[in-house]
Image 1 (cartoon, rainbow, N blue to C red):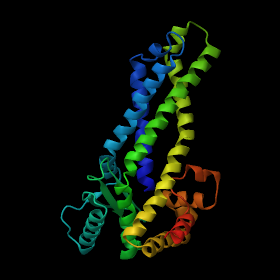
Image 2: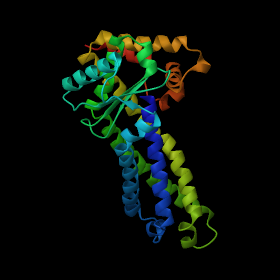
Image 3: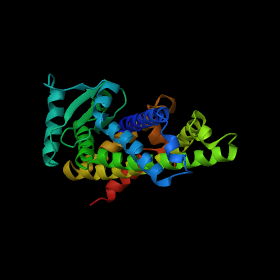
Image 4: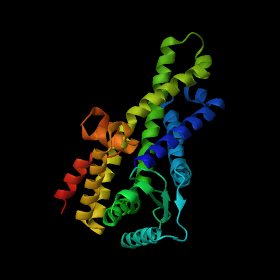
Length: 297
């Protein structure tokens, strides 16, 4: 899950920057500032760019995930493990009243799984070889229930909408900040400064800075939906199985030396110690997820 969110955010940022660059090359900025700062035009511009980048990221998320992690899709099961995996996903999809997702396996030593896709009836559920090797079947079943819950809840679409709103305000306030900076340091005519690459460069720097701060909102929602997906798995697979799966992940994390931990483990480690960096974590600490499930009725 951590990998998929990181890939979505990175893709979204890259698309956002490319769109901003293209619009800058076509000299759009002067139309926003030629009579001072036109806030209405700027907000429309920011919304178009912000939501375009976010929705492009959503529509290519499945394709990107397959190629980024070299996911091997299971079309016809050739092993007992593949048959079991397909059957479990199929049963869970029927219980949650969604279309059968594509199912795949990717080679990675870390126990991980993710779900992605723009449509809950055309999604992808992928698990790592590390997950299949390290966990028992009932634990893997709980993880699959968690990922199917993400799909059924439409979490990717909700995340996209939130990201689009965040992008809009990042661009909006970045351009305002760049406008104020250029007004303060201007050395020539407004047209020369506002329409040039200096203004674009300053705006880009502010977009990156504000984007980092705005990611706090996206990460908060990501943590919230993890609790919700845990409850979904507990409801359809069994609370004890989901707790057992999380405890198993905690055990694997504790057994792995800090320097050897995969990025997903490092993220959980930061969250576990209550550091301020936990605000940038896509997942809550495992202890809190287990505690929340134990209280869930």
